[in-house]
Image (cartoon, rainbow, N blue to C red; front, side, top):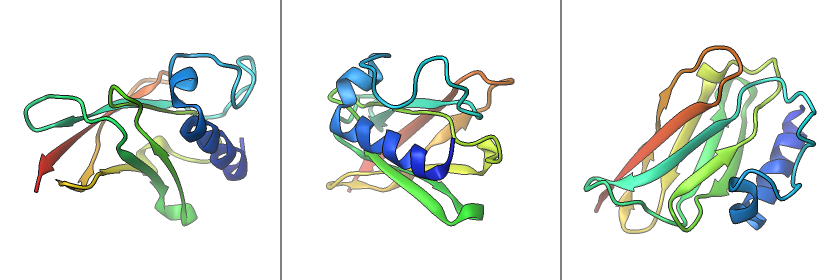
Length: 126
């Protein structure tokens, strides 16, 4: 999958987050299409552990000078389909921001092979 296709897929996630996060909706790539890399999923929470809905999520690939932006859903969850095989998941930085909170970098839990990578972003009130 090219970066352009990843950006298009992320736009669809922003436009239709509930259906896309729920694992279907027919948006983005076909389920049987090889995305190359593993997908990322996660949640945005505040320091008390409560979910933070409608948070801006920015996934950046510094080596490629590329980024995509989406928003968490009403329960603070987000999903990013896998990037091209040439992108090392370790090179993907996920940042979260929302008015009233300090921006934060998500903590990623590495996964083996093509398993989805979990990212948790903890925002602190300003």
